[in-house]
Length: 291
Picture 1 (cartoon, one colour):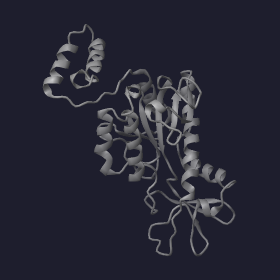
Picture 2 (cartoon, rainbow, N blue to C red):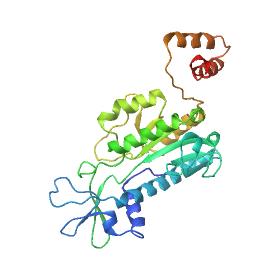
Picture 3 (cartoon, helix red, strand yellow):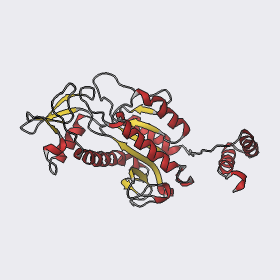
Picture 4 (cartoon, rainbow, N blue to C red):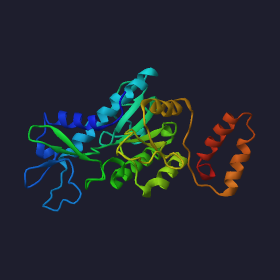
């Protein structure tokens, strides 16, 4: 199973040209050249291209469904695009990009959702469309003016915001891992943020499934694995299996030290670690003064 690479992007442009014009897929220069991104140093008149966003978004979501389907089938599950689950904030207007579920329905109950994936992938390399329809790679993301994938601050903020919305929609989302699936590194300004999001349990990781976005070495992982670059399919399976097998639960709250001490003391009376954890979660979720 191949991870994201240059062939994936050629496949996107090849499929998209059947229902989109070159002007909808590429930036056109006054000289008639077609670029996926404006090259660095380009100083002539420029336009803003929006029409490609929905096309690459839909392509990468479908690509991710196919990519995750083998893992899902192994566990008698289904990888599904556009899952809706109102009880955890996934609406028809803002569905899950990809979910692994116990049934193959698009409208899901939270109890049947095993994993959620937000896909933040886009065209990484710069490409020039030649007259004969061939694509020539002009360089990696450092050679053009666009910030693709998880290098975009707005993409990161959308992914974080949506994940938080899922977490605060109710306790029914507490057991569901959330992964942000990308094909680029993250910028240095997000290293501590992604680590904190993982440590706090809001998001279980920002994973890039593009092992070689540049010819030189790129970020492999942040200090606490908030971001991970996955280099082969076996490595991906290892991380997916760990999430699938481990029974984790998200919790949050703000209590006084006295309240926390009382909760810990009561929980500690239980006989096993699992029972202690269950009692702690039960008590931490009770509203103040029992309301």
